[in-house]
Image (cartoon, rainbow, N blue to C red; front, side, top):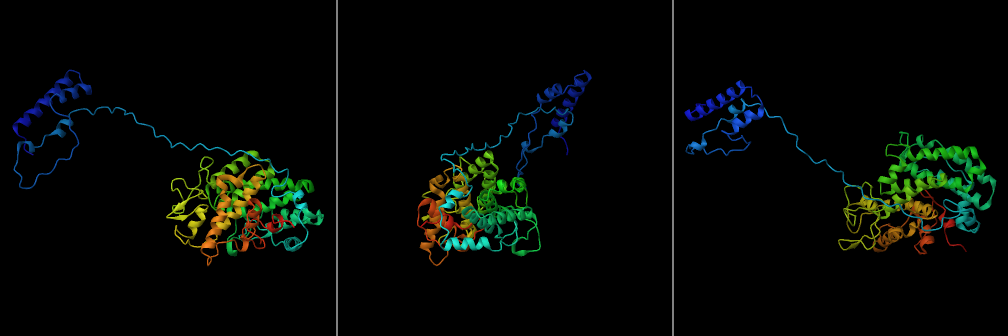
Length: 442
């Protein structure tokens, strides 16, 4: 670049000023900076438009040599700039639910006194008694299709009704044989991989705890009871590839979470852990729709079945309508497993699996004084009603309880005084025998 005379003399003047300042001992950056600023504007990083190729040259287009000047000035010491510390989004204040009912005097699921009023005759009793007298199968806490747990419960129920010590011993032995199988059973469809999943342990554990309560394991075999208590305490936070019972309960608003929650509630009652029980009730109330109670579930990206995308819940609130269709009571995370929101919905059996865990947890918490059956405008009843209405509207699709879900309507009818259709209560994933324990007497 050829420097024109005015620029040359300007540059020379600046060099002279700098040399004089240095010679005078004024090496301080502020002095030099002040001397330069008096003559040249501070360079600013800007984008200058490039003129068209044929544009006429003008004096203003001649470049100013800012970079040459900068080399002669000491770099100013950076001044710290105040920055705002990011503030974490406040976690919503949660309120644990209160016990507003008198707790049941005894019985995690049902008491011996209540069972004493039930008949030892009729189809429901005969099927229960036959199951208690038969082979229970191999104990397998991590088995996807294991029935040993609900069959052990049958033995305990027969003992509690008859006081026949043969059944007490048989149930205690079944519990003893089960301890430790949570890590050794075969996984789904008898694949060769061994191990377990929290969701399967959640399914299979609750019936053993209820059975231990019904046979008074603490009085029958204190040593085994101590072993059993330590075992179920450890299972609360034992980790599998899908998490733990507590993690499943607190992050999944699905059948997995509710199966885990049911077992968590039973553990808390059996161990007399009030803090754990209250926390379980708090999470459960959040699942039913109370955001002030609990709202830390992890929902899937597809929230199309949610009545409120920004406040997703396990069961849609009363009166919810979407696209002109009623979704009041829809189990949101289970309906999306059928498909994204549409009517008629894609069929899925997952809502009933979620209800299996939900109603077991609800009954356990209810017997401890929590008014769960009425929480969130009777959310559980509304969930059952939603499926019943789907069955009535789309009779060609099996939306009502079938196969291992048939024990659920018996309990719902008993609690709410409803008259939903029932079939013999088959062995469910975590419960059964409700056509005898909760069916109409007489």
